[in-house]
Length: 185
Length: 394
Image 1: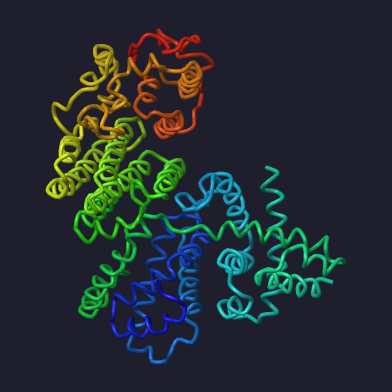
Image 2: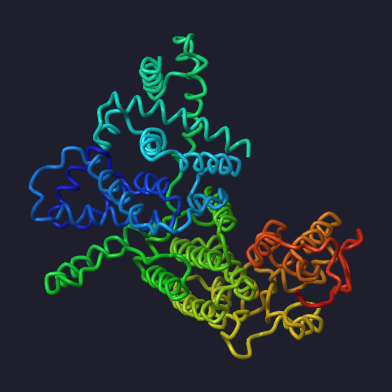
Protein backbone atom coordinates (compact mmCIF):
# COMPACT_ATOMS: atom_id res chain seq x y z
CA UNK A 1 0.00 0.00 0.00
CA UNK A 2 1.33 3.35 -0.96
CA UNK A 3 1.50 6.20 1.48
CA UNK A 4 1.16 9.87 0.80
CA UNK A 5 4.93 10.25 0.88
CA UNK A 6 5.37 7.86 -2.05
CA UNK A 7 3.09 9.81 -4.32
CA UNK A 8 5.64 12.30 -5.68
CA UNK A 9 7.87 9.42 -6.66
CA UNK A 10 5.00 7.56 -8.29
CA UNK A 11 4.01 10.66 -10.21
CA UNK A 12 7.57 11.26 -11.33
CA UNK A 13 7.75 7.73 -12.69
CA UNK A 14 4.33 8.11 -14.28
CA UNK A 15 5.51 11.29 -15.97
CA UNK A 16 8.23 9.19 -17.56
CA UNK A 17 5.51 6.96 -18.99
CA UNK A 18 5.43 4.28 -16.29
CA UNK A 19 1.84 3.07 -16.44
CA UNK A 20 2.24 0.79 -13.47
CA UNK A 21 3.27 3.68 -11.21
CA UNK A 22 0.35 5.66 -12.47
CA UNK A 23 -1.88 2.67 -11.70
CA UNK A 24 -0.70 2.78 -8.10
CA UNK A 25 -1.30 6.49 -7.95
CA UNK A 26 -4.75 5.87 -9.38
CA UNK A 27 -5.58 3.29 -6.75
CA UNK A 28 -4.51 5.66 -4.02
CA UNK A 29 -6.99 8.33 -5.09
CA UNK A 30 -9.71 6.23 -6.70
CA UNK A 31 -12.13 6.13 -3.78
CA UNK A 32 -12.04 9.76 -2.81
CA UNK A 33 -12.19 11.09 -6.35
CA UNK A 34 -15.05 8.74 -7.16
CA UNK A 35 -16.86 9.87 -4.00
CA UNK A 36 -16.27 13.53 -4.78
CA UNK A 37 -17.72 13.09 -8.25
CA UNK A 38 -20.57 10.87 -7.17
CA UNK A 39 -21.93 13.45 -4.75
CA UNK A 40 -21.83 16.01 -7.52
CA UNK A 41 -23.55 13.92 -10.19
CA UNK A 42 -25.66 11.50 -8.11
CA UNK A 43 -25.25 8.68 -10.58
CA UNK A 44 -22.72 5.97 -10.07
CA UNK A 45 -22.40 5.16 -13.77
CA UNK A 46 -21.61 8.75 -14.57
CA UNK A 47 -19.33 8.90 -11.54
CA UNK A 48 -17.35 5.90 -12.74
CA UNK A 49 -16.98 7.31 -16.23
CA UNK A 50 -15.99 10.74 -14.97
CA UNK A 51 -13.56 9.27 -12.47
CA UNK A 52 -11.86 7.41 -15.27
CA UNK A 53 -11.73 10.54 -17.37
CA UNK A 54 -10.13 12.47 -14.51
CA UNK A 55 -7.27 10.03 -14.35
CA UNK A 56 -6.91 9.83 -18.09
CA UNK A 57 -6.59 13.58 -18.18
CA UNK A 58 -4.12 13.46 -15.31
CA UNK A 59 -2.08 10.95 -17.29
CA UNK A 60 -2.17 13.07 -20.41
CA UNK A 61 -1.28 16.14 -18.39
CA UNK A 62 1.66 14.36 -16.80
CA UNK A 63 2.93 13.20 -20.14
CA UNK A 64 2.35 16.45 -21.86
CA UNK A 65 5.45 18.08 -23.24
CA UNK A 66 4.22 21.33 -21.77
CA UNK A 67 4.34 20.12 -18.17
CA UNK A 68 7.73 21.16 -17.01
CA UNK A 69 7.06 22.45 -13.54
CA UNK A 70 6.69 20.23 -10.51
CA UNK A 71 3.25 19.63 -9.09
CA UNK A 72 3.29 21.30 -5.70
CA UNK A 73 0.18 19.77 -4.20
CA UNK A 74 -0.73 16.47 -5.79
CA UNK A 75 -4.08 16.10 -4.09
CA UNK A 76 -5.17 19.60 -5.03
CA UNK A 77 -4.00 18.97 -8.59
CA UNK A 78 -6.13 15.83 -8.96
CA UNK A 79 -9.11 17.53 -7.38
CA UNK A 80 -8.86 20.46 -9.71
CA UNK A 81 -9.03 18.11 -12.66
CA UNK A 82 -12.02 16.40 -11.08
CA UNK A 83 -13.65 19.73 -10.40
CA UNK A 84 -13.27 20.75 -14.02
CA UNK A 85 -14.76 17.45 -15.15
CA UNK A 86 -17.76 17.95 -12.91
CA UNK A 87 -18.19 21.50 -14.19
CA UNK A 88 -18.00 20.27 -17.79
CA UNK A 89 -20.48 17.54 -16.99
CA UNK A 90 -23.04 19.99 -15.65
CA UNK A 91 -22.42 22.46 -18.46
CA UNK A 92 -22.89 19.91 -21.22
CA UNK A 93 -25.86 18.27 -19.61
CA UNK A 94 -28.89 18.86 -21.78
CA UNK A 95 -31.06 21.55 -20.19
CA UNK A 96 -34.24 19.61 -20.79
CA UNK A 97 -32.84 16.54 -19.14
CA UNK A 98 -34.77 16.16 -15.92
CA UNK A 99 -32.90 15.73 -12.70
CA UNK A 100 -34.00 12.60 -11.01
CA UNK A 101 -35.45 13.60 -7.70
CA UNK A 102 -36.38 10.18 -6.52
CA UNK A 103 -34.36 9.75 -3.33
CA UNK A 104 -34.62 6.00 -3.64
CA UNK A 105 -32.51 6.18 -6.75
CA UNK A 106 -29.80 8.28 -5.20
CA UNK A 107 -26.43 6.66 -5.11
CA UNK A 108 -27.67 3.59 -6.87
CA UNK A 109 -24.98 1.04 -6.72
CA UNK A 110 -22.82 3.18 -4.51
CA UNK A 111 -21.09 1.06 -2.03
CA UNK A 112 -21.70 1.71 1.61
CA UNK A 113 -19.84 -0.43 4.04
CA UNK A 114 -22.58 -0.09 6.52
CA UNK A 115 -25.82 -1.62 7.48
CA UNK A 116 -29.18 -0.96 5.96
CA UNK A 117 -30.17 1.63 8.53
CA UNK A 118 -27.06 3.50 7.71
CA UNK A 119 -27.91 3.18 4.06
CA UNK A 120 -31.27 4.80 4.63
CA UNK A 121 -29.84 7.72 6.57
CA UNK A 122 -27.01 8.05 4.11
CA UNK A 123 -29.48 8.34 1.29
CA UNK A 124 -31.24 11.14 3.07
CA UNK A 125 -27.98 12.91 3.69
CA UNK A 126 -26.91 12.43 0.10
CA UNK A 127 -30.20 13.88 -1.02
CA UNK A 128 -29.57 16.85 1.25
CA UNK A 129 -26.11 17.41 -0.21
CA UNK A 130 -27.52 17.31 -3.70
CA UNK A 131 -29.98 20.08 -2.89
CA UNK A 132 -27.35 22.49 -1.64
CA UNK A 133 -26.38 25.44 -3.76
CA UNK A 134 -23.25 24.77 -5.78
CA UNK A 135 -20.53 26.37 -3.67
CA UNK A 136 -22.05 25.03 -0.44
CA UNK A 137 -22.19 21.59 -1.99
CA UNK A 138 -18.53 21.82 -2.89
CA UNK A 139 -17.56 22.83 0.64
CA UNK A 140 -19.59 20.06 2.24
CA UNK A 141 -18.23 17.37 -0.06
CA UNK A 142 -14.63 18.44 0.34
CA UNK A 143 -14.71 19.21 4.06
CA UNK A 144 -17.02 16.59 5.52
CA UNK A 145 -17.38 13.80 3.01
CA UNK A 146 -13.81 13.73 1.80
CA UNK A 147 -12.55 15.13 5.10
CA UNK A 148 -10.15 17.73 3.82
CA UNK A 149 -8.71 20.51 5.94
CA UNK A 150 -9.66 24.16 5.64
CA UNK A 151 -6.34 24.81 3.95
CA UNK A 152 -6.76 22.03 1.40
CA UNK A 153 -10.26 23.17 0.53
CA UNK A 154 -9.03 26.74 0.16
CA UNK A 155 -6.38 25.62 -2.29
CA UNK A 156 -8.74 23.51 -4.37
CA UNK A 157 -11.43 26.17 -4.49
CA UNK A 158 -8.87 28.92 -4.92
CA UNK A 159 -10.24 30.99 -2.06
CA UNK A 160 -8.89 32.07 1.31
CA UNK A 161 -9.20 29.93 4.40
CA UNK A 162 -11.35 32.54 6.11
CA UNK A 163 -13.68 32.39 3.14
CA UNK A 164 -13.80 28.62 3.51
CA UNK A 165 -14.81 29.02 7.15
CA UNK A 166 -17.62 31.40 6.26
CA UNK A 167 -18.88 29.17 3.45
CA UNK A 168 -18.64 26.16 5.71
CA UNK A 169 -20.87 27.76 8.32
CA UNK A 170 -23.46 28.82 5.76
CA UNK A 171 -23.36 25.47 4.01
CA UNK A 172 -24.00 23.63 7.26
CA UNK A 173 -26.88 25.93 8.05
CA UNK A 174 -28.45 25.29 4.67
CA UNK A 175 -27.82 21.58 5.02
CA UNK A 176 -29.57 21.64 8.38
CA UNK A 177 -32.60 23.34 6.87
CA UNK A 178 -32.74 20.89 3.99
CA UNK A 179 -32.39 17.90 6.26
CA UNK A 180 -35.21 19.04 8.47
CA UNK A 181 -37.39 19.19 5.34
CA UNK A 182 -36.14 15.89 3.96
CA UNK A 183 -36.66 14.02 7.20
CA UNK A 184 -40.13 15.49 7.67
CA UNK A 185 -41.30 14.36 4.24
CA UNK B 1 -22.49 37.56 15.27
CA UNK B 2 -22.17 35.37 12.28
CA UNK B 3 -18.49 36.16 11.71
CA UNK B 4 -17.60 35.13 15.19
CA UNK B 5 -19.60 31.97 14.99
CA UNK B 6 -17.89 30.97 11.76
CA UNK B 7 -14.54 31.06 13.54
CA UNK B 8 -15.86 29.23 16.58
CA UNK B 9 -17.40 26.57 14.40
CA UNK B 10 -14.14 26.15 12.49
CA UNK B 11 -12.20 25.85 15.76
CA UNK B 12 -14.58 23.26 17.12
CA UNK B 13 -14.41 21.25 13.91
CA UNK B 14 -10.64 21.32 13.88
CA UNK B 15 -10.57 20.17 17.49
CA UNK B 16 -13.01 17.38 16.80
CA UNK B 17 -10.99 16.34 13.77
CA UNK B 18 -8.02 16.09 16.12
CA UNK B 19 -9.97 13.83 18.45
CA UNK B 20 -11.82 16.12 20.85
CA UNK B 21 -15.42 15.35 21.69
CA UNK B 22 -18.35 17.40 20.62
CA UNK B 23 -19.35 17.93 24.23
CA UNK B 24 -15.99 19.32 25.21
CA UNK B 25 -16.22 21.85 22.45
CA UNK B 26 -19.72 22.88 23.35
CA UNK B 27 -18.64 23.25 26.97
CA UNK B 28 -16.03 25.78 25.92
CA UNK B 29 -18.56 27.89 24.08
CA UNK B 30 -21.71 27.83 26.20
CA UNK B 31 -23.12 31.01 24.66
CA UNK B 32 -22.99 29.53 21.17
CA UNK B 33 -24.09 26.07 22.19
CA UNK B 34 -27.61 26.33 20.76
CA UNK B 35 -26.32 27.36 17.38
CA UNK B 36 -23.23 25.18 17.31
CA UNK B 37 -24.63 21.88 18.46
CA UNK B 38 -26.92 21.04 15.51
CA UNK B 39 -24.24 22.04 13.04
CA UNK B 40 -21.60 19.93 14.71
CA UNK B 41 -23.96 16.98 14.96
CA UNK B 42 -24.69 17.37 11.28
CA UNK B 43 -21.01 17.02 10.49
CA UNK B 44 -20.88 13.86 12.60
CA UNK B 45 -23.82 12.45 10.68
CA UNK B 46 -22.08 13.15 7.43
CA UNK B 47 -19.15 11.00 8.44
CA UNK B 48 -21.16 8.01 7.36
CA UNK B 49 -20.94 9.29 3.79
CA UNK B 50 -17.19 8.90 3.91
CA UNK B 51 -17.79 5.18 3.47
CA UNK B 52 -19.25 5.62 0.02
CA UNK B 53 -16.99 4.16 -2.61
CA UNK B 54 -17.15 2.64 -6.05
CA UNK B 55 -18.77 -0.69 -6.67
CA UNK B 56 -16.40 -3.52 -5.81
CA UNK B 57 -16.36 -4.81 -9.35
CA UNK B 58 -15.40 -1.42 -10.67
CA UNK B 59 -12.84 -0.89 -7.96
CA UNK B 60 -11.25 -4.27 -8.53
CA UNK B 61 -11.03 -4.01 -12.28
CA UNK B 62 -10.61 -0.29 -12.70
CA UNK B 63 -6.85 -0.22 -12.60
CA UNK B 64 -6.49 -3.03 -15.08
CA UNK B 65 -8.95 -1.32 -17.40
CA UNK B 66 -7.26 2.03 -16.90
CA UNK B 67 -3.87 0.69 -17.82
CA UNK B 68 -5.37 -0.87 -20.94
CA UNK B 69 -7.03 2.42 -21.71
CA UNK B 70 -3.80 4.31 -21.25
CA UNK B 71 -2.21 2.07 -23.81
CA UNK B 72 -5.16 2.63 -26.12
CA UNK B 73 -5.08 6.38 -25.59
CA UNK B 74 -1.44 6.45 -26.61
CA UNK B 75 -2.47 4.90 -29.90
CA UNK B 76 -5.27 7.44 -30.10
CA UNK B 77 -2.72 10.23 -29.75
CA UNK B 78 -0.97 8.90 -32.82
CA UNK B 79 -4.26 8.87 -34.67
CA UNK B 80 -4.98 12.40 -33.56
CA UNK B 81 -1.77 13.57 -35.06
CA UNK B 82 -2.76 11.99 -38.32
CA UNK B 83 -6.14 13.60 -38.36
CA UNK B 84 -6.80 16.54 -36.07
CA UNK B 85 -10.40 16.82 -37.10
CA UNK B 86 -11.40 13.45 -35.82
CA UNK B 87 -10.36 13.91 -32.25
CA UNK B 88 -12.36 11.70 -30.00
CA UNK B 89 -12.15 11.80 -26.26
CA UNK B 90 -10.96 8.44 -25.04
CA UNK B 91 -13.64 6.66 -23.12
CA UNK B 92 -12.65 4.48 -20.29
CA UNK B 93 -15.95 2.70 -20.06
CA UNK B 94 -18.93 2.91 -22.33
CA UNK B 95 -22.00 4.71 -21.10
CA UNK B 96 -24.05 2.35 -19.06
CA UNK B 97 -27.42 3.89 -19.52
CA UNK B 98 -29.21 0.83 -20.59
CA UNK B 99 -28.50 -0.19 -24.11
CA UNK B 100 -28.30 -3.84 -24.95
CA UNK B 101 -25.44 -3.53 -27.36
CA UNK B 102 -23.39 -1.57 -24.86
CA UNK B 103 -24.35 -3.84 -22.04
CA UNK B 104 -23.31 -6.78 -24.14
CA UNK B 105 -20.02 -5.12 -24.88
CA UNK B 106 -19.37 -4.36 -21.23
CA UNK B 107 -20.20 -7.81 -20.01
CA UNK B 108 -18.25 -9.57 -22.70
CA UNK B 109 -15.28 -7.30 -22.07
CA UNK B 110 -15.49 -7.89 -18.35
CA UNK B 111 -15.84 -11.60 -18.78
CA UNK B 112 -13.06 -11.71 -21.30
CA UNK B 113 -10.84 -9.99 -18.80
CA UNK B 114 -11.74 -12.35 -16.02
CA UNK B 115 -11.32 -15.28 -18.35
CA UNK B 116 -7.63 -14.62 -18.66
CA UNK B 117 -5.37 -15.78 -15.91
CA UNK B 118 -4.39 -12.26 -14.97
CA UNK B 119 -7.96 -11.13 -15.01
CA UNK B 120 -9.07 -13.90 -12.76
CA UNK B 121 -6.25 -13.26 -10.37
CA UNK B 122 -7.10 -9.61 -10.35
CA UNK B 123 -10.79 -10.08 -9.91
CA UNK B 124 -10.24 -12.60 -7.20
CA UNK B 125 -8.92 -10.14 -4.71
CA UNK B 126 -12.30 -10.14 -3.03
CA UNK B 127 -13.14 -12.38 -0.15
CA UNK B 128 -13.77 -15.98 -1.08
CA UNK B 129 -16.15 -18.52 0.40
CA UNK B 130 -14.84 -19.34 3.81
CA UNK B 131 -13.41 -15.91 4.36
CA UNK B 132 -14.83 -14.00 7.26
CA UNK B 133 -15.91 -11.24 4.95
CA UNK B 134 -17.56 -13.43 2.37
CA UNK B 135 -20.98 -13.30 4.01
CA UNK B 136 -20.70 -9.56 4.14
CA UNK B 137 -19.81 -9.50 0.46
CA UNK B 138 -22.90 -11.49 -0.41
CA UNK B 139 -25.07 -9.25 1.77
CA UNK B 140 -23.70 -6.22 -0.01
CA UNK B 141 -24.45 -7.80 -3.34
CA UNK B 142 -28.04 -8.16 -2.22
CA UNK B 143 -28.15 -4.49 -1.33
CA UNK B 144 -26.88 -3.66 -4.80
CA UNK B 145 -29.54 -5.85 -6.32
CA UNK B 146 -32.20 -4.14 -4.27
CA UNK B 147 -31.00 -0.79 -5.53
CA UNK B 148 -30.91 -1.85 -9.17
CA UNK B 149 -33.68 0.02 -10.95
CA UNK B 150 -34.68 -2.50 -13.59
CA UNK B 151 -34.31 -6.02 -14.88
CA UNK B 152 -31.42 -5.17 -17.17
CA UNK B 153 -29.45 -3.70 -14.27
CA UNK B 154 -30.17 -6.74 -12.15
CA UNK B 155 -29.03 -9.04 -14.94
CA UNK B 156 -25.88 -7.03 -15.33
CA UNK B 157 -25.18 -7.18 -11.61
CA UNK B 158 -25.87 -10.88 -11.41
CA UNK B 159 -23.55 -11.52 -14.35
CA UNK B 160 -20.85 -9.63 -12.51
CA UNK B 161 -21.52 -11.62 -9.36
CA UNK B 162 -21.45 -14.88 -11.33
CA UNK B 163 -18.09 -13.91 -12.78
CA UNK B 164 -16.83 -13.05 -9.31
CA UNK B 165 -17.91 -16.45 -8.05
CA UNK B 166 -15.97 -18.07 -10.89
CA UNK B 167 -12.92 -16.02 -10.02
CA UNK B 168 -13.29 -17.07 -6.39
CA UNK B 169 -13.61 -20.69 -7.45
CA UNK B 170 -10.44 -20.34 -9.48
CA UNK B 171 -8.57 -18.89 -6.52
CA UNK B 172 -9.82 -21.33 -3.92
CA UNK B 173 -9.20 -24.37 -6.10
CA UNK B 174 -5.73 -23.03 -6.83
CA UNK B 175 -5.17 -23.03 -3.09
CA UNK B 176 -6.38 -26.63 -2.90
CA UNK B 177 -9.41 -25.53 -0.92
CA UNK B 178 -11.93 -27.87 -2.48
CA UNK B 179 -14.83 -27.17 -0.12
CA UNK B 180 -14.74 -23.43 -0.62
CA UNK B 181 -14.14 -23.88 -4.33
CA UNK B 182 -17.26 -25.99 -4.61
CA UNK B 183 -19.21 -23.45 -2.62
CA UNK B 184 -18.13 -20.76 -5.05
CA UNK B 185 -19.24 -22.94 -7.97
CA UNK B 186 -22.56 -23.49 -6.22
CA UNK B 187 -23.00 -19.78 -5.73
CA UNK B 188 -22.16 -19.31 -9.39
CA UNK B 189 -25.03 -21.70 -10.17
CA UNK B 190 -27.35 -19.63 -8.01
CA UNK B 191 -26.52 -16.52 -9.98
CA UNK B 192 -27.07 -18.28 -13.31
CA UNK B 193 -30.36 -19.59 -12.01
CA UNK B 194 -31.47 -16.14 -10.91
CA UNK B 195 -30.43 -14.67 -14.25
CA UNK B 196 -32.54 -17.23 -16.08
CA UNK B 197 -35.53 -16.09 -14.04
CA UNK B 198 -34.87 -12.43 -14.63
CA UNK B 199 -34.41 -12.85 -18.34
CA UNK B 200 -37.56 -14.90 -18.65
CA UNK B 201 -39.62 -12.31 -16.87
CA UNK B 202 -41.60 -9.46 -18.31
CA UNK B 203 -39.12 -6.75 -17.44
CA UNK B 204 -39.67 -4.73 -20.55
CA UNK B 205 -36.19 -5.54 -21.75
CA UNK B 206 -35.33 -6.74 -25.22
CA UNK B 207 -35.55 -10.46 -24.68
CA UNK B 208 -33.65 -11.45 -27.77
CA UNK B 209 -30.83 -9.08 -26.98
CA UNK B 210 -30.72 -10.30 -23.39
CA UNK B 211 -30.63 -13.86 -24.56
CA UNK B 212 -27.79 -13.04 -26.90
CA UNK B 213 -25.95 -11.28 -24.11
CA UNK B 214 -26.33 -14.24 -21.84
CA UNK B 215 -25.13 -16.63 -24.49
CA UNK B 216 -21.97 -14.57 -24.76
CA UNK B 217 -21.56 -14.62 -21.01
CA UNK B 218 -22.21 -18.32 -20.77
CA UNK B 219 -19.68 -18.97 -23.48
CA UNK B 220 -16.97 -17.21 -21.53
CA UNK B 221 -18.06 -18.85 -18.29
CA UNK B 222 -17.76 -22.20 -19.97
CA UNK B 223 -14.22 -21.42 -21.03
CA UNK B 224 -13.29 -20.48 -17.48
CA UNK B 225 -14.92 -23.55 -16.03
CA UNK B 226 -13.30 -25.83 -18.59
CA UNK B 227 -9.90 -24.40 -17.71
CA UNK B 228 -10.76 -24.99 -14.08
CA UNK B 229 -11.69 -28.59 -14.72
CA UNK B 230 -8.08 -29.55 -15.30
CA UNK B 231 -6.93 -27.95 -12.11
CA UNK B 232 -9.36 -29.27 -9.54
CA UNK B 233 -9.10 -32.49 -7.59
CA UNK B 234 -11.07 -35.50 -8.75
CA UNK B 235 -13.89 -35.07 -6.25
CA UNK B 236 -14.67 -31.58 -7.51
CA UNK B 237 -14.78 -32.42 -11.20
CA UNK B 238 -18.34 -33.65 -11.20
CA UNK B 239 -19.67 -30.34 -9.90
CA UNK B 240 -17.55 -28.36 -12.29
CA UNK B 241 -18.73 -30.49 -15.21
CA UNK B 242 -22.33 -29.84 -14.22
CA UNK B 243 -21.67 -26.13 -14.07
CA UNK B 244 -20.13 -26.37 -17.55
CA UNK B 245 -23.24 -28.16 -18.76
CA UNK B 246 -25.32 -25.36 -17.33
CA UNK B 247 -23.27 -22.64 -18.94
CA UNK B 248 -23.20 -24.46 -22.25
CA UNK B 249 -26.95 -24.66 -22.55
CA UNK B 250 -28.49 -21.75 -20.75
CA UNK B 251 -32.04 -22.91 -20.86
CA UNK B 252 -34.59 -20.55 -19.48
CA UNK B 253 -33.30 -17.92 -21.81
CA UNK B 254 -35.94 -17.42 -24.42
CA UNK B 255 -34.73 -18.38 -27.80
CA UNK B 256 -31.27 -19.31 -26.67
CA UNK B 257 -31.19 -23.06 -26.98
CA UNK B 258 -33.62 -24.97 -29.10
CA UNK B 259 -35.07 -27.82 -27.18
CA UNK B 260 -33.97 -26.45 -23.87
CA UNK B 261 -35.26 -28.44 -20.99
CA UNK B 262 -38.67 -27.23 -20.06
CA UNK B 263 -39.61 -26.37 -16.56
CA UNK B 264 -41.60 -29.52 -16.29
CA UNK B 265 -38.54 -31.70 -16.44
CA UNK B 266 -37.34 -30.83 -13.03
CA UNK B 267 -40.31 -29.57 -11.18
CA UNK B 268 -42.36 -32.08 -9.33
CA UNK B 269 -45.69 -31.02 -10.77
CA UNK B 270 -44.58 -31.41 -14.31
CA UNK B 271 -47.91 -31.55 -16.05
CA UNK B 272 -49.11 -28.40 -14.45
CA UNK B 273 -45.92 -26.67 -15.33
CA UNK B 274 -46.63 -27.54 -18.92
CA UNK B 275 -50.04 -26.00 -18.54
CA UNK B 276 -48.37 -22.86 -17.39
CA UNK B 277 -46.43 -22.58 -20.61
CA UNK B 278 -49.56 -23.16 -22.58
CA UNK B 279 -51.15 -20.34 -20.70
CA UNK B 280 -48.57 -17.90 -21.86
CA UNK B 281 -45.87 -18.07 -19.26
CA UNK B 282 -42.46 -17.89 -20.87
CA UNK B 283 -40.80 -21.21 -20.80
CA UNK B 284 -38.90 -21.75 -17.59
CA UNK B 285 -39.91 -18.44 -16.13
CA UNK B 286 -39.42 -18.41 -12.44
CA UNK B 287 -38.38 -21.98 -12.31
CA UNK B 288 -34.77 -22.58 -13.10
CA UNK B 289 -34.44 -25.96 -14.61
CA UNK B 290 -31.77 -28.53 -14.85
CA UNK B 291 -29.83 -26.73 -17.49
CA UNK B 292 -30.05 -23.35 -15.85
CA UNK B 293 -29.05 -24.82 -12.55
CA UNK B 294 -27.32 -28.12 -12.67
CA UNK B 295 -27.74 -30.77 -10.12
CA UNK B 296 -25.56 -30.00 -7.20
CA UNK B 297 -24.89 -26.50 -8.38
CA UNK B 298 -26.48 -23.62 -6.58
CA UNK B 299 -27.28 -25.68 -3.55
CA UNK B 300 -25.09 -26.34 -0.59
CA UNK B 301 -23.88 -29.86 -0.04
CA UNK B 302 -24.43 -30.82 -3.60
CA UNK B 303 -28.09 -31.51 -3.06
CA UNK B 304 -30.60 -31.19 -5.82
CA UNK B 305 -31.65 -27.65 -6.64
CA UNK B 306 -34.36 -26.46 -4.30
CA UNK B 307 -36.61 -25.83 -7.24
CA UNK B 308 -36.35 -29.47 -8.22
CA UNK B 309 -39.02 -30.59 -5.83
CA UNK B 310 -41.71 -28.03 -5.40
CA UNK B 311 -44.04 -30.51 -3.78
CA UNK B 312 -41.62 -31.30 -1.00
CA UNK B 313 -40.93 -27.63 -0.54
CA UNK B 314 -44.61 -26.81 -0.43
CA UNK B 315 -45.30 -29.53 2.08
CA UNK B 316 -42.67 -28.29 4.44
CA UNK B 317 -43.72 -24.67 4.09
CA UNK B 318 -44.48 -22.99 7.38
CA UNK B 319 -47.85 -21.38 7.86
CA UNK B 320 -46.18 -18.04 8.31
CA UNK B 321 -44.27 -18.32 5.04
CA UNK B 322 -47.31 -19.61 3.17
CA UNK B 323 -49.24 -16.56 4.27
CA UNK B 324 -46.36 -14.25 3.39
CA UNK B 325 -46.19 -15.79 -0.09
CA UNK B 326 -49.91 -15.36 -0.52
CA UNK B 327 -49.56 -11.72 0.44
CA UNK B 328 -46.74 -11.29 -2.08
CA UNK B 329 -48.79 -12.93 -4.82
CA UNK B 330 -51.66 -10.61 -4.07
CA UNK B 331 -49.44 -7.57 -3.86
CA UNK B 332 -47.79 -8.23 -7.20
CA UNK B 333 -50.87 -9.54 -8.96
CA UNK B 334 -49.35 -12.92 -9.79
CA UNK B 335 -50.60 -16.34 -8.95
CA UNK B 336 -49.71 -18.06 -5.75
CA UNK B 337 -48.17 -21.05 -7.47
CA UNK B 338 -45.73 -18.85 -9.32
CA UNK B 339 -44.63 -17.22 -6.10
CA UNK B 340 -44.37 -20.57 -4.34
CA UNK B 341 -42.15 -22.01 -7.02
CA UNK B 342 -39.88 -19.05 -6.82
CA UNK B 343 -39.76 -19.28 -3.07
CA UNK B 344 -38.79 -22.93 -3.30
CA UNK B 345 -36.04 -21.98 -5.69
CA UNK B 346 -34.79 -18.77 -4.17
CA UNK B 347 -35.29 -19.92 -0.60
CA UNK B 348 -35.98 -16.57 1.04
CA UNK B 349 -38.95 -14.26 0.99
CA UNK B 350 -36.65 -11.35 0.42
CA UNK B 351 -35.31 -12.82 -2.78
CA UNK B 352 -38.79 -13.61 -4.02
CA UNK B 353 -39.92 -10.10 -3.28
CA UNK B 354 -36.84 -8.73 -4.98
CA UNK B 355 -37.49 -10.88 -8.03
CA UNK B 356 -41.12 -9.83 -8.20
CA UNK B 357 -40.22 -6.20 -7.82
CA UNK B 358 -37.61 -6.56 -10.50
CA UNK B 359 -40.03 -8.16 -12.89
CA UNK B 360 -42.88 -5.80 -12.45
CA UNK B 361 -41.76 -2.64 -10.73
CA UNK B 362 -43.94 -1.19 -8.02
CA UNK B 363 -47.33 -2.82 -7.98
CA UNK B 364 -50.07 -0.74 -9.46
CA UNK B 365 -53.74 -1.46 -9.55
CA UNK B 366 -53.21 -4.39 -7.29
CA UNK B 367 -56.47 -6.21 -7.00
CA UNK B 368 -57.87 -6.33 -3.53
CA UNK B 369 -58.22 -10.07 -3.53
CA UNK B 370 -56.49 -12.93 -5.24
CA UNK B 371 -56.58 -12.79 -9.03
CA UNK B 372 -59.96 -14.03 -10.17
CA UNK B 373 -58.54 -16.36 -12.77
CA UNK B 374 -56.62 -18.27 -10.20
CA UNK B 375 -58.53 -21.30 -9.13
CA UNK B 376 -56.40 -21.78 -6.09
CA UNK B 377 -56.07 -18.65 -4.09
CA UNK B 378 -53.76 -18.00 -1.23
CA UNK B 379 -53.40 -20.66 1.39
CA UNK B 380 -55.94 -20.86 4.11
CA UNK B 381 -53.53 -21.41 6.93
CA UNK B 382 -52.60 -24.73 5.49
CA UNK B 383 -48.96 -25.61 5.51
CA UNK B 384 -47.99 -26.29 2.00
CA UNK B 385 -50.57 -23.98 0.52
CA UNK B 386 -53.02 -24.88 -2.19
CA UNK B 387 -52.71 -27.77 -4.59
CA UNK B 388 -50.06 -27.02 -7.14
CA UNK B 389 -51.51 -25.91 -10.43
CA UNK B 390 -50.44 -23.45 -13.06
CA UNK B 391 -53.18 -21.11 -14.01
CA UNK B 392 -50.63 -18.96 -15.74
CA UNK B 393 -49.27 -15.63 -14.86
CA UNK B 394 -51.25 -12.49 -15.44
